Length: 105
Image (cartoon, rainbow, N blue to C red; front, side, top):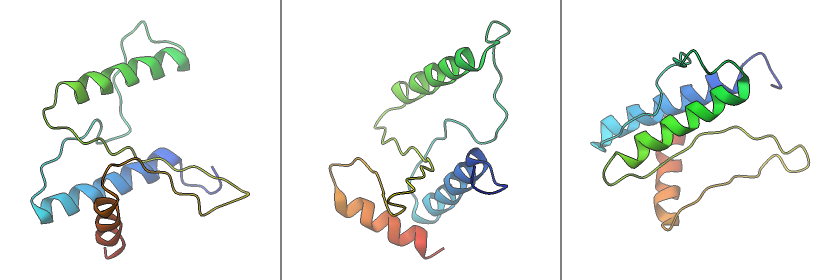
């Protein structure tokens, strides 16, 4: 955390803005989470077990959703190169279009 804003808060804000764009453009979406509140089983007591549970739940959600395109939002800080942008796609034009839509908000 480089400021008082937690990464999870920033990521959720970005994801919710993407939802708003999806609604405007008619793109169907589903979220793996829409708040910071995550219900864990009683057996998930450690940070590691909670992360494993959360990842397993997300993978199940993705695998059970037809025609899925996964967009995962993260904030990574590379002090030696702060302009690093990672994305995975087979369609770079789609990423450019998404970036332009997002920047116009």
